[in-house]
Image 1 (tube, rainbow over the protein chains, first blue to last red):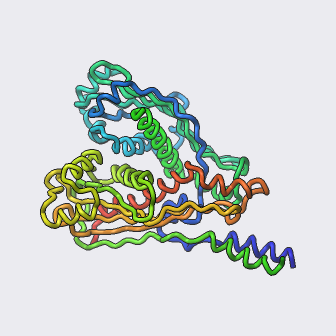
Image 2: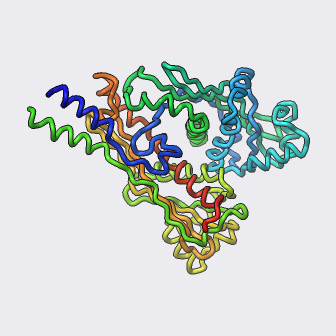
Image 3: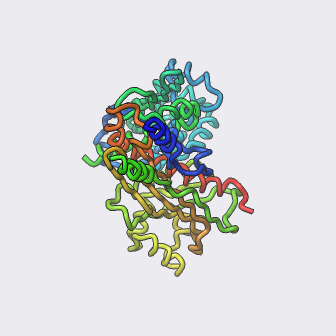
Length: 234
Length: 210
């Protein structure tokens, strides 16, 4: 009888939750039932903010196409379902756009660069002064992705972005802001607070690469923007 | 002791409650995606949430996500400054003045639509073997000229942790509910819900509504 009670209890717990709705089918990363919840691993933000940035907040800023380390080029080339560097830039742009800077859209930046014969992999070859003149901005943000990973094995699942972001004053080429952060998700039945229902969903969720990368990029961007705000208010 | 088992199990099951499903109300005259619309995201409000941090964060996340749609977004700082200069702070006042032709947001920002949000629920519960975070948000879309409501979407999420998620061991049974209330989990709840609600608004402008 005791065994039966235990089995019934487990069955009820597993069965607990809400009916599926549209949202859960398309995304459902937390979605009420906590399904597909991959814990975020947080590393410290390493950043430097120039006093010039806090003194002169009204800047027109362009976020340039990301450059990639050799390791990141190698890993991103494997996936045809997601452009992880472009996704990272888009997500970061959205979070940066809420700050009191004038930012020009990604489409506008790419179109102006393309019109002037500058491909995204040639960003570092052009001077910041030339780029800012072409784009009509006071500051440029360079993104360098050092690690871009989406790993699924039988024992763990992980998605990761590691990036350094640098904001440069177009006139003086002075560094206004530099921040480095590694952010990832890691799933497995190891560590404090591990839960079976989440573990079962880890790998499946991590295979949805666009959403897995998006989630890490959101978290990465949120943390660096929060850090920047904190430093500007110091 | 045995007589206690059933009520205890039942109350644990009740703890893992359900959040509000996605609900969408849309007027037929919502402008379909013929051109890029300019959007002003008004300050968000809450009658239940203490502190502005979550309210502001939900507004910023919605704004950030809408950048990916077929929209031009007015700068939040400029919108807030304009409202401050116009001596209005609450969205109700904004809409009232707008409908009385006293607040030409459509001219100042060249705005087509206004987005406003209301946080209906933001609670964190800790009960030893169980914890949860609940967030419930409603977004409204208004015509920037007339102030008429064009659409509203609402959804809630509950992130349960602990006994209802089957902890992997005795230690996990104690630590999972605490881990479930960490700031990163709270952020995750906010990101997930705002992403989904914003996506619904983005889709409004991508597909013909009739």
